[in-house]
Length: 259
Image (cartoon, rainbow, N blue to C red; front, side, top):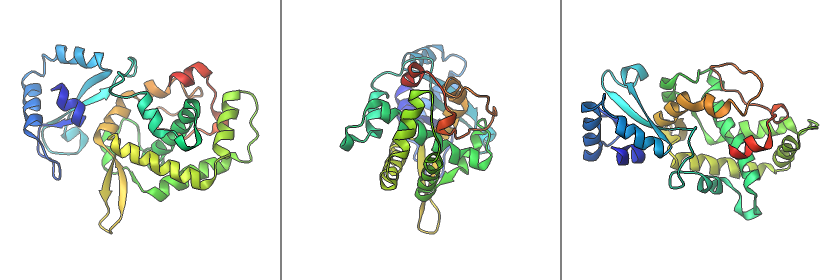
């Protein structure tokens, strides 16, 4: 059960068009179905791995008339083991050609993640709790790049004073050429595809858009407020993700480094 949850993130008790259900997945789901009320040992083991088991009725997510899905989401109150994530992920997002520091990589990761969330949630007025909205949440390369560039352009004429970390972020973003921003944006999308956060979807017109995966939608619904609560000091709407401008962010260095 653990191996299948770790490999596939989401296990289905029913057939899904275009998705192959292996025999191992079917057996893992059968075990979960038979022991739904007695999974304490599995949940305890998942906790040691920085994970948590979540289950939803398919009908409640508008993905099928019957059946259940079992999802392994991250448990942010525990450290993630090195073999699941961590420094390797940050290195993948860094610009090794410019010998970029881990701190600068973390700042870029924050901006790129919030830009993605803006496109998946804010622009469609979608509540965080709306897991079923993953089926309609889509964007393409040009939308992602344009949104990121526009956010940076708005900051070019802003004078930043006070918090040195905010000033560093402002200088980092506004000091990047548009071609560099575009390359970083496209690399980030590719890493999100490899990580199972996004999936490619054909439009029927020969082009490709990126959609949110069910795993990502459930993980954000379960954990977003725990991730972001310490990073966004000013009150925000409980059900809408906002793209926070660099001059509006204020948080101590230790919290930023930890996240």
